[in-house]
Length: 283
Image (cartoon, rainbow, N blue to C red; front, side, top):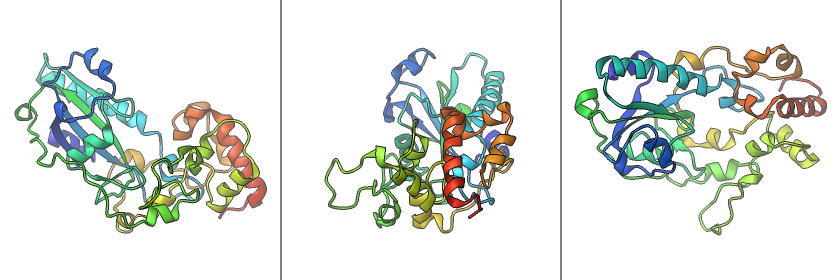
């Protein structure tokens, strides 16, 4: 199992009993035959490449990680079934039966930042999460249980809160209901309908047509963070998205991008507004 993952550039993984996880969608477990004795193998997929995007969030500049996970699941489940034909083994990511950030923390793979993201000391918060649920034991798979089983948080340096262009991240002393996610610039770029002038100005000021990395870039762990070792995230990176580049994407290629889930109208609206007010010049 370890060799299988390492050969595919997946070096951050750890195993925990599902009894220690926060189960949020129990039906995904029961319909796949899992009970309270199942185990979880948490995995991190670093995605930041050396090609830094100029007007996109880093996650939006690479291909949609869901297709990476789907292909990995086919390979991995086939590999396990070949060795353990009667085992239960299922991969999840995003649409998951457990709280993935919490599970990654108690697996020793990272800690929770004030921005709510999982932060890994090697790759900062530029990581996607995924996991395999199985009835196989650590001995079967050759992966030991994680020694750490507590949730840790960051040093609360306040840099992410200071960097957030919308003031969405809580700082020490803020009231409990301070964090309105609807204000987040990333959410603004993904909303349907028309953008008002203030929302467009936020996009222009932060050089983005999709997403926002302000809090991630400000994090001290990002300064020396390493780039992805996974080939999937190094290939076909969009460094600058303008109308011409968007139009060159075929329907099939468009579906492979992280911004495709909202449909083409939303990202096209953002690109046109950005080009109109920026004069179509690359920043």
